[in-house]
Image (cartoon, rainbow, N blue to C red; front, side):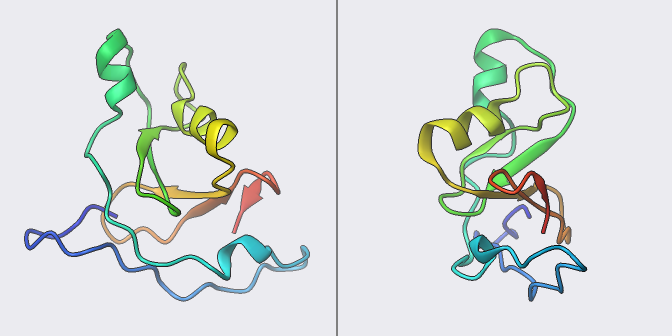
Length: 104
């Protein structure tokens, strides 16, 4: 999910089926975003370590995952109500809906 060398926006893969769970309406309106960074800036400020990085699929904000001690991606969701984030690494189609508390 990191922009290529040309700086082009990240393209989302087509949303797959949600299995037997009710469909997540939050993925319907997602558009390609450009990540604002390649690291969690909030972790850098406080010198915290991070486990994984996520990119907000509404605005491109990059933050540490819920597996990290600081949970900045979840804090971003709480502040903005942006519902879906994805893994910040190349060619990943993994997405997490904070509203539904599940992968979508």
